[in-house]
Image (cartoon, rainbow, N blue to C red; front, side, top):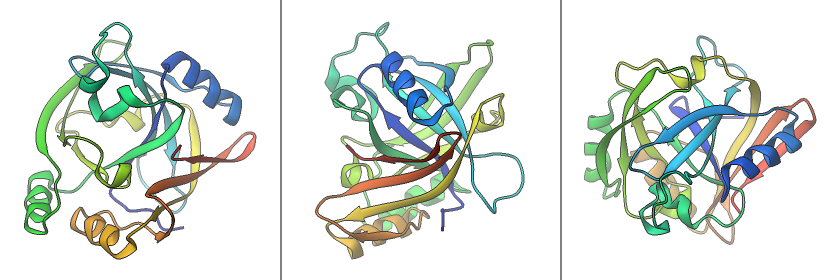
Length: 219
């Protein structure tokens, strides 16, 4: 397995957060813990840490179960990352953590890759800690989610280093209608990923869990 060293997290998007957390727990035998709400973005999340075999050091990768936040009640079109339009649990998109977000944004622009704008945002954890980060946001998902967004955790401790239950990321790949074009985009973002030909753009992750291997894929 080859996982980009810049992989930050995978987004498992669900139409209803409570139901989605329960569904994933039934699949894996592990229940994601509450992360928090994203004020103004219309989403909230639960988290699971991901161990990547062969990667030493502190954990820097996690699985985010993300869904519309009913307490914000934003119209579907205003919910961040197109999560308001999710109709079934799906490996929706992913995030990469470049060494220099601004330099990567410039390199992407030079390569003709649309990453949108860089936005600063924050959320409060259930134990009252403030997490702050910057991320790229564009209108709609690039390549139906195969194009990742960029994230920079600034001076905030990485969420994966918290007290999270853990699964193992055994494999992470993509399919694309245009393999060469998709690889060009991923290279510009510093996010090389194994891409194979397919009838649509989609993501696939294989997790090692207490209930055996579990595949999460784009719906």
